[in-house]
Length: 225
Image (cartoon, rainbow, N blue to C red; front, side):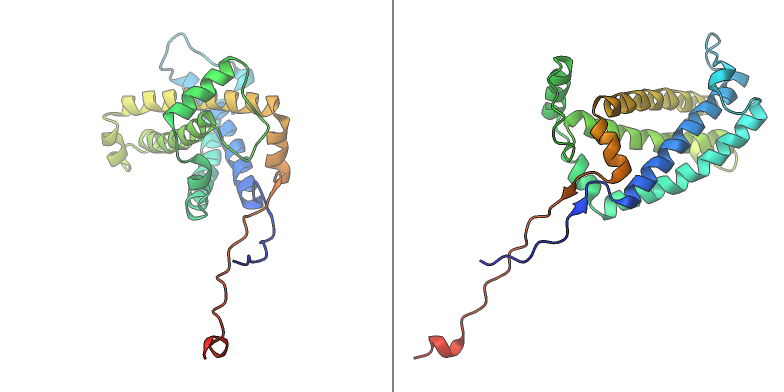
């Protein structure tokens, strides 16, 4: 069966995805640093305070304005990112299927310092789990944030989490987990610099598999007697 000419090779990370990635990165960092200042004004854990050197805003009121400034780009860009990943099929190709066995094997390889980094076009089990978890965390942060910001206007969200204080605790917990994801994500990027370069340049070009073309039907005049 003849094969059609292959389509032009595309980058591992298309330009639209790279733009959304860096908007998300800047927004998340801005929300974390401004959120720490807001937290200091009304802490959940009495022993935990964040030094002003690591916060954004200077005063809780100013920090709250910064928080809102970074919140809207994250929400709008996050929706665009989820739509893009779903419609384009990128989530299905890169993040699924998620195998428990593969994830446990990847963790074991990492603990024995045998984790392979040769093929950056393939996500291992831990990467899939981390990225799916980060998406779920950002959704949780938006919902709990709305419940804290406007508990009356978004009473459905407030009731979903049980109470205003529960929403605060969940928002704080989500922030801590998101910080952990950022640390791991950055550490892996520094350990494998080509993954960071790929998110700047687009990475290697992926050659799609050629599409088979059905063979032409034989000429009727040639088959007739």
